[in-house]
Length: 267
Image (cartoon, rainbow, N blue to C red; front, side, top):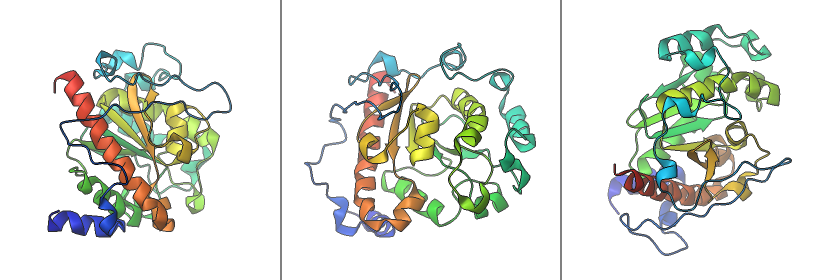
């Protein structure tokens, strides 16, 4: 283990927990991923096949806008990045607009293979107009670096809601519903290979289900035909240090899954 990785792991509070409790898998030997349903109050969305093959080829924009359940309603579905940024900045679809300093669309590579979706902006994000720039953001950056990723380099980071909920409370269902078309349009424009839901609100808005993080971890879910992995929000990990080891297992699962997706698509 090199010293840089040791430093990153210490920032995550993991230290010697780098070694997984199950046998390590070589990067070139990606094991078959488990697929299971999300716990829901209604019928769960169908999950992807456990064999990541042609069904997980990178979808074109039409795949998100073809009238499938939960597809982006017009006119948001037709917006390019510049128009989408303007629409989000001017949005008054819910009460969150009343106290915001600015809407926070997202940041990163708009052609990224990796899309990370959090909950919503906090106080520092509201000030600076960029997601994950506070203490939770620094932990997220360390988590990304631990699996060879970097903010803005093949990575895009967004949120379920674009405006800060008062007091950093959890976004309400109606607020997430009002913002969902913008997130859907971001996904359609980015066309990621893999989406990572950071925390329960992000998972619920993506999967349209009553997600329990503990039950949803370690499985592949799907936003339409894009694989989704659910893990803990970095802010939660700062308050619950014991779960950082589980978050590391999720990071390893993400890396294995992406390797398998790229192998299946010939990338």
